Every structure is written in C-alpha cells, then in structure tokens.
Image (tube, rainbow, N blue to C red; front, side, top):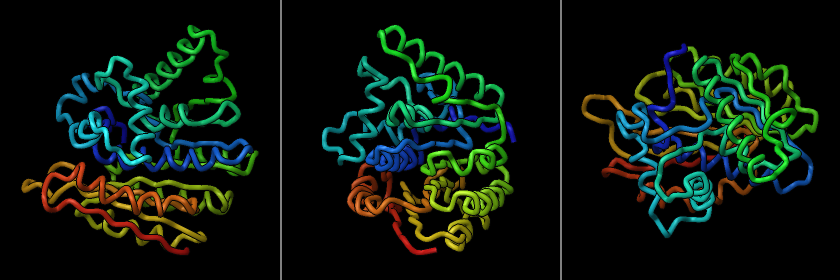
Length: 295
C-alpha cells in the first residue's frame, strides 16, 4: 500500500506518544558506552513542514505538538521532546516537525548507526534529501559530518523484509521501531510475523511498535497477540484524547507496545501519562492505559 503519506498527520497526538517513547528509549541506550543500531522499518520523509498543504488540510498537529509548544510546565520527558523540536525551529515559530528518523539522529551519538527503510517513492526521495540537508548544515558549521555513509543508510525498500538482514546488529545492541500505516489489515499480521522472526535472530533487542487504536477486530486483538510473543518483558501504553467522533472518522487513540523495555520506562510513563491526558484531552473520553508483563 503506497497511498499513505504521514505528512497529513505529522505532529498529532499519536506522534507525541510515539516520539516521546522513542526519545526516552534512545536516551536509555545512550547510557552505555557501547554503540548500538537504530532500525526504522517505515521511516517516512524524516521532516515535515507544518505549513504544507498536506499538514494544513486537517491541522492534526493541533491535537498534539500544537498544544505543547507554548507550555512552560512540561514534565522532563516531554521537555526533552519539545526542546528537540524547538531546536529545528530557531525562529520560535512552529514550522517544522521531525519524523522518527530525525528524532533518532539528533539523540544518537556519532558511533551509533541508523538504518532507515521507506517504500513510498516520494517519501524515500524526500527522506534522502532531508538527510542531505543535515549533512550540508553540519558542513556549513565547520563540523565533520557523520550523517551519511556508515552512520546513516537509507533504503527504498519494504522494512518488514529488510529488517531480517540487519539482525542481530554487530554490537548486539539495538532498537527497532515498527510503525506501518495499518491502512491494510495485513499490516497487523506482518508486524506480528516480523517480530516472531526478529526475536529468533535478536532476542535481546528493544522493539517498539506503534499502532492505531481503532474499533476494528484487528486493532482490538493486536495487543493480546503481541503479549503472547516469546519475550521476557513487555510494556503497553495507550493514549486516548477523546471519545470517538460521531461519524467514526479521525484517530482519537493510539498505542505503543515495547518489547524488552528499559526498567525506567514504566516509572516515566506513570508520571507522564496523566499529565498528557490533561494537556491533550479534548473531552471526558480522554484517558490512558499502562500495563507491563512477562512474555
């Protein structure tokens, strides 16, 4: 399915949840000296212009980053996230929003490696262009660029298939983000199958799966299917900003399922999620769930 373009949804409440969790996972991996690999199976375009026609169509960023941009009372994990976005908007105007690859590149260290997959031809091209701009910006500042080459590799390919060849990473340390669009029901099955294979190749890796919480069977059953995977520990968090719209359209809830989560993640989310519900909630239906367990 090549119709999905994340530009229409950039910066929404689901992106807030996904990117806050991602950044905290990367910070945890940074605590050890040994290098690690970050793999993004559905990388998207990397950076999104919030004043583009796509982003402005439904202005979904108003349900997410738009509500946090001017806040001065952000909890530490949210402050890490918002400061990263402010750094790419030095004018103070919220114009650009980072996708997962940009968030990762900014948090990771020079010795760490990024492997990015994107199948959509336009987004794959824009992703490459955005990382070219990062390299040029580093050069203009007189810095040695580590953006391209061995550190960052971009492939126009199906990330479900491409992941296999990268596991286990040479350092035996890694984080895999899996967030397909789920526009086709088969994405749910492919995520589960991909994780089953990945856990055989690299059982100690950290795997972060984003998914939309929808009133369809595949979405409702998805978390329980992931809980049955052969893994030692998992964490499951969902954020709901309000009751479903009367017409059934629009995403109001999403989840992150993390396999082999760091021990710090649950405590961070326990403190953060009630605050986030208050900040992003639009009616009495706003809520969150947080659960952990063994595989």
